[in-house]
Image (cartoon, each protein chain N blue to C red):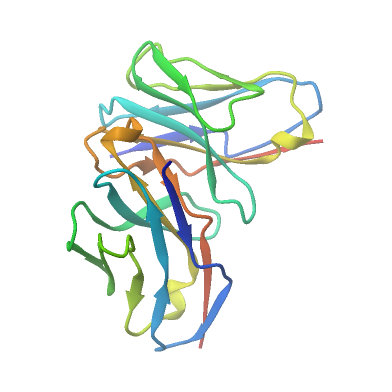
Length: 112
Length: 113
């Protein structure tokens, strides 16, 4: 079972560039999430989705966009990258029944 | 609102020492509670969970009991190993939160031989 797969694992962006972080899951989960992890700050929710075609903002959505055209995929788009977006990004999914979330391996992004 | 507060680290213990990492939560109703572990360079993995009051989650020698009266879910292990060195996160989710997960800030544990 692949679970939640994120690509790329590492990326360096220049200020003002854009990129898409890919996330796919093979567990047929309706709920998907994007978190960022900054040192000593825990995980902050960026966006989440409760099913294909439905997305909503989390705690820190500014500077990001998402889409959910299929159950499996939940890409995160960064437009006009800024140094404040240097972080580790995690995608996660759950079946939405008060059970655990499954996490990808993370994408370490540096904006210079 | 919903939130999780966990013991600040870092924590350094000798092998075979007893471990406690405190976690308290604020939530409406009866959330599900989790402990996740993150090894260096990896994503978060579920360590254990509890879905109702007085439930005890356990895995790999770790335990945590869902205490509604004290809104706590403290993580314990009787004898830690070097391989337990990692960052531990307490988390909650709830149907009333739209199944969003709320995480504590994480506690870094280092076990020395």
